[in-house]
Every structure is written in C-alpha cells, then in structure tokens.
Image 1 (tube, helix red, strand yellow):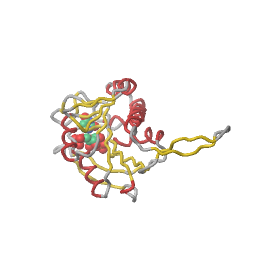
Image 2: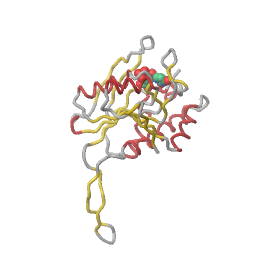
Image 3: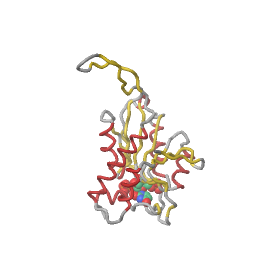
Image 4: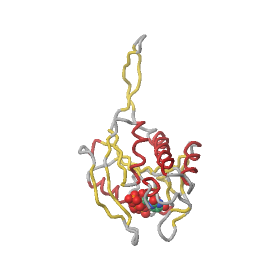
Length: 216
Ligand code: PRP
Ligand code: URA
C-alpha cells in the first residue's frame, strides 16, 4: 500500500496500516525509549518490504523432500545498509532480519544546532562499492542537508544505486534531496507539514536520536 504524488516525484509514502499504526505510537511524547526503539525497528522492517519490491530474482532449482522444483532467489547487486549516525542505527536490525546477507556501512553526520548544516565525522562502507545497492537510513528527513551530504559522500566513493529510507519527511527535505540527487528514490512512512524555526519536523516525533538512545 503506497502513495506517490506528482509534487514529489521521487517520494513513495508507505501507507500500510501496520506502518501507520506503529508510527502513531512512535509520535506519542509518552512512548518510552524501549518501545520507541522497538517501533523504529519494526517500521523499518515493514518499509524495507516495500522498498525491496523491485529486487531482481532469478530462477534456481530446489530439492524438496519429494522432488526437484524451480524456485527463485535474489540476484543482481548486493545490498548494503548505510545508517546515518546516530538515529539511523535504529533502523538497521529490523531490515537485517529481512535481508540477513546485507552488509552495513556507516556515515557519521550531525546537524550543527546553529546553522543546521551537516557536519561529517565518519565514513566507512564496504570496498566493492560499484557492485552494491545502497539503502541510506535515517528516521528523519528535515532540511535534507544530512541526507544530501550522505548521498554525495556515497557517490564520491563510487556508489550509483542509492535509495533513502526515512520514517518522517518534511516537504523541504524531500525537495532538497530530490534537487541534489534526483536519481535517489525516497521512501517515507509520513510526509509531515513543515519545519519549525529550529529545524524540527512538525508534527514530527521530536529528536529521533535522543528518543532512541534516551539522551537529554
Ligand atoms: C538528525 C536526524 C538526521 C538529521 C536530519 O540527526 O537523525 O540525521 O537530524 O536533519 P536534516 O534533514 O535537517 O539534516 P542529528 O543531527 O540530530 O544527529 P544525531 O542523530 O547524532 O542526534
Ligand atoms: N532531527 C530530528 O531528530 N528530528 C527532527 O524533527 C528534525 C531533525
């Protein structure tokens, strides 16, 4: 169950009832850290189900206990998850449960609180970059600065096939990422209204990193 709009051609919103139900609990200010973490994990897994819908498969023979038959297995490029530190980490395990063979890279970025510009501090991805499909993970797409910077770093390293998965997106962030990287599909569980003066998404869910890790 997905939604696409002409205004944001690179965006796919995942409207599955389970995703929307869990997202609503996630937004609740009273949801404790433990539940918050579990929900981010579960929503990421459900979103990955949709975001992997076009993975290529090829036929293979399989021996059942009774006879040999033709099955399918995923072929093509190898999958790599790239969480943007910190909050993207919360999305990794859920997706790995669906795609256990995926590798995990890391991009360290934080938003300067004054300028809202991304500051990068870490970059590590598997070596065979051109062989891989990348899923960049971050629960929040606010101004889009962090996402655009992460994708730029991956492309600089040689990546060509990149998707971006977030839980909550702001229109400004979707526009910014699409302008900088029109080739990168964006998957979100919600497209929210706007950003406040501090760059927080409204209605949003607050500071994803702080709520995931119990800081502040
Ligand atoms: C948050 C969030 C994104 C970024 C989104 O991280 O997890 O990475 O802000 O904002 P943007 O779209 O305006 O760039 P933050 O910078 O708070 O770092 P943290 O995960 O370490 O808390
Ligand atoms: N980062 C967050 O964690 N939350 C927002 O609303 C915006 C950026």
